[in-house]
Image 1 (spheres, rainbow, N blue to C red):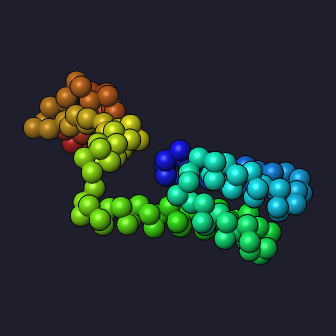
Image 2 (image 1 turned 120 degrees about the vertical axis):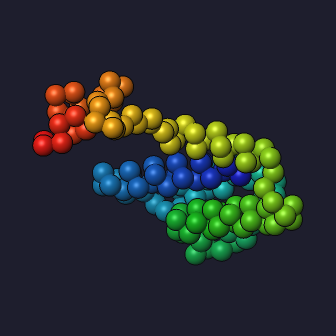
Length: 137
């Protein structure tokens, strides 16, 4: 499991906990914490010392949001540290950003009417209501 997957996993857990509480189901705070920490410690040996510290702290274990926020902060810190050590983002991370943004933000080509003529490729209005041909409208 890499940092991106850990982030997704934690965010899904946060969403599920909010959904559970929004419908009025009350569960002890410790119940969601142990599976989250177990899953992360199983998949990521880099976080063992952090997880051990969280287990030792009774306050953190009693509040799942503290645990998840701490893990997300750790991941963000690690990302910043990794980016700083290389001096710049890797080509792979740039490519992933481009690909993910391309799907998220598609652009639309707009066809403008100009020079007193309606552009037939413009589908936002009909020729009879085109302001370029009929400026009085």
